[in-house]
Image 1 (cartoon, helix red, strand yellow):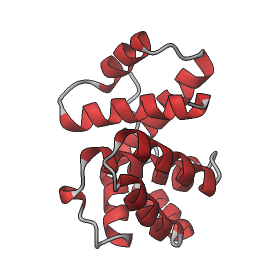
Image 2: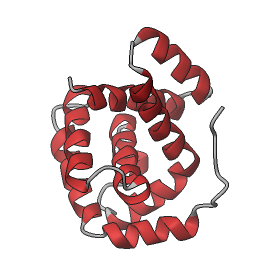
Image 3: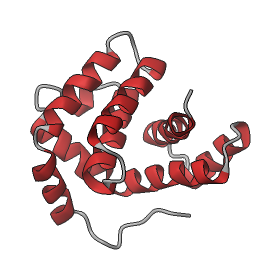
Length: 152
C-alpha cells in the first residue's frame, strides 16, 4: 500500500470508529498510531484529514445528500459514508489533492474496506459530486464557520 494510502486508511479507521461510537477522535487516533507505524509527516497528513472532516461532517453530509440524492446517507454503510466525506473534503475543502487522486484513493479504500459493490458505488457518487465541485466548494465555504476545530 502506498504511504499516503496508508495514512488515509488510518484516517478512515478513526472516522469510522468515531462515527459509530462516542470515542474521542484524539484518543482513537493515538491508539491507531500506536498500532500502525507511520512516519511523522504521514501521521500529520492523517490528522489533517480527520480534524478537517470531523467538525464539518454535517455540512459534508448535506452536500452529498443534495448532489447525490439517490443515495440517502442514513441508509449508507458507515464505511462508505466516511470514504465519501474524506474524498469530498480533500477535493472541495483542502484542495491539496487533485480531484482524480482523491477519487482514486477513495476507490482504493473502498476496495480494501468496503463490500464488493462499495468501490463502484463510491466512484459513482464521487463522479456526481465532482460535476459540481466548484459549487460544492462555495456552498461549504459559506456554511462552515472559520473557527471550527476539534483538534485535541
